[in-house]
Length: 138
Image 1: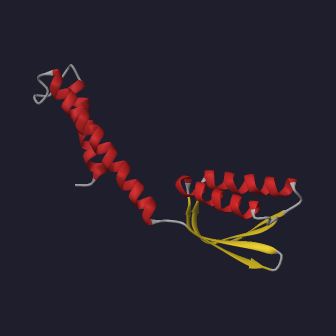
Image 2 (image 1 turned 30 degrees about the vertical axis):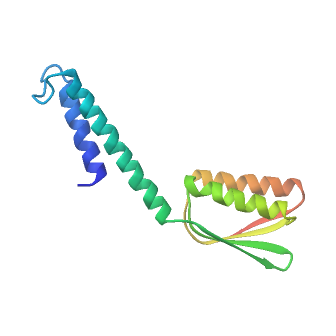
Image 3 (image 1 turned 90 degrees about the horizontal axis):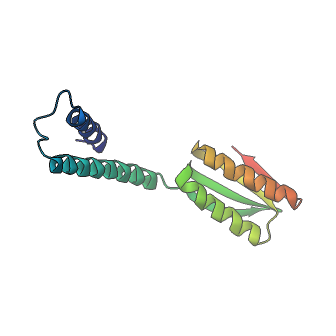
């Protein structure tokens, strides 16, 4: 049974248990409701853990290479909320290293979330202020 199915099943049981018009026979004491609330929390954590593992399995790979006056970062994977911080760190390191002409190769990125777009816009503005160049390759 998957964590999502367990969570939805426990939610239905809790709704039945809290419905005063039709009390569920499993919930005769308040301690039983506490037990089921604990089980629901466990199922939610298990579902979150599964999502986190999938996110880790779809990890991001960032490689750096120099192409003329440009520093090119080649990004592979997903640019979602979890991995946006990693890209931010990589871009900050490159800029601190003195690179003002950055090319970001996103050809192998399968997904970009709104937070990923925010990171791209943030670094575009930052380099524009110092008369640098931030270009994207898709």
